[in-house]
Length: 169
Image (tube, rainbow, N blue to C red):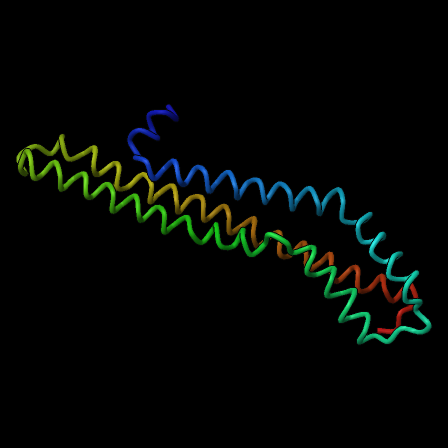
């Protein structure tokens, strides 16, 4: 069934499939980080920073510019790549539309307009990648927004934990 879908959708579906695999890899990596590694990673970052810059002698502007910026930057790695890949999916789907329409025009040039059955494969090749790109984008945007919310929540919780450690914020 999946093989038939790839055959009917044309070669653009293979590109969409590859992009989807990269999106899933990034999503799984980020969720794994958030749910399993983030607490220990933040504690390690805080302990290393606290050894080097004790709370009594460190200004908030310095904490913000060094530690909070570092945590934010490192926790958001690959988020821009994820955003770019998600936004590419509809464009790749539209490329499939163009490819399918070229197939339809080729059939029209050889057989004329009297054979609608011959044109149906090109129409399928035009619509399946577009639909696939839109579906991938819809799911990708949901998880992208969820990840951004979780990372922002993680940063805010870390910022409030700095107050508990004695840093004046």
